[in-house]
Amino acid sequence: MLIWKTFLTYKEYKLNNKLSVLFIGDIVGEPGMNCVKELIPGLIQKYKAEFVVINGENADKGKGLTEKEVGELFEIGAHIITTGNHIWDNWKSKPILASNPKVIRPLNYPPGNVGLGYTFHTLEDETQICVLQLQGRTYMQTIDCPFRAADFALKAIQEKTKNIIVDFHADATAEKIAMGWHLDGRVSAIIGTHTHVQTADACILPNGTAYITDVGMTGPYNSVVGLKKEIALKRLIHQIPYKYEMGEGDARIAGVNVIIDITTGQALKIESFVQPEFVKSVFEQFES
Ligand SMILES: [Fe+2]
Ligand SMILES: [Fe+2]
Image (cartoon, rainbow, N blue to C red; front, side):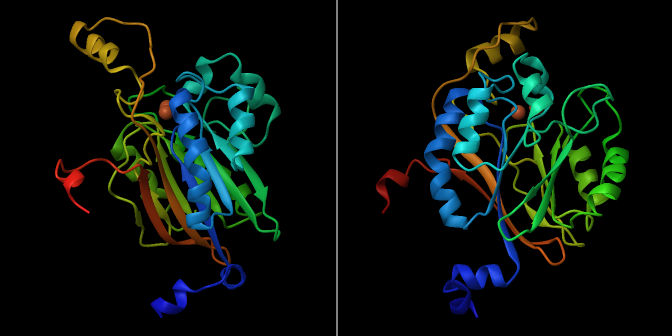
């Protein structure tokens, strides 16, 4: 059985009604952009990914997106770009949200804000897939309820497709886990973003939804979640604001690959990755 799977051709793969999705975590600044541009072709090839979602809320120097990053991310293979709370920090981002339905923001911001909270994409074989973004409220802005927003949106989305990827942009792990249980069996995957550190809990929930609390950051790890480490330490030790400066160095890409059965919308597999992998032993250089 294992040997058969290993030698599955692309055509057989398609015939089996599986869809391979690549979700890349928050791109932070130029280090994150350079890293994703360099590594995503290999990842798309490795996972035979047909649908790519990238969270770009920090792509322009840590805050929001401009047309430049949007153009580059679509050029390297993104189908949909999600964002988050920092999209509103960059005045160049609002016109993008207002005009490009493939760049979305959390649905549960109050009515009157520009942009879409969910969007659809049709693949070459006519498969429809939806990406929905929600934002948590614990330790964040007290926007509308993400749980009720999800229920409301799913009524409309499920009339079109069962293949639904949710980017839950939230700070508190408990709120993210709760959303996992709330949506299990109703969406294909719930991918946590915002906290920039990949969690070790990627799994398939009992009713068939792929889940991870946080997918992690694509950006400079020689930093404090993207912020220059010296600035982060001053902020924490002095307890006063210091101007935001991007971290530099040790750029890595973080993401997950999710395989969906498009006949049911259920997830069959979730695999998380960070590339290059973290050094976990000083003895590694002597091994091989
Ligand atoms: Fe972020
Ligand atoms: Fe965020």
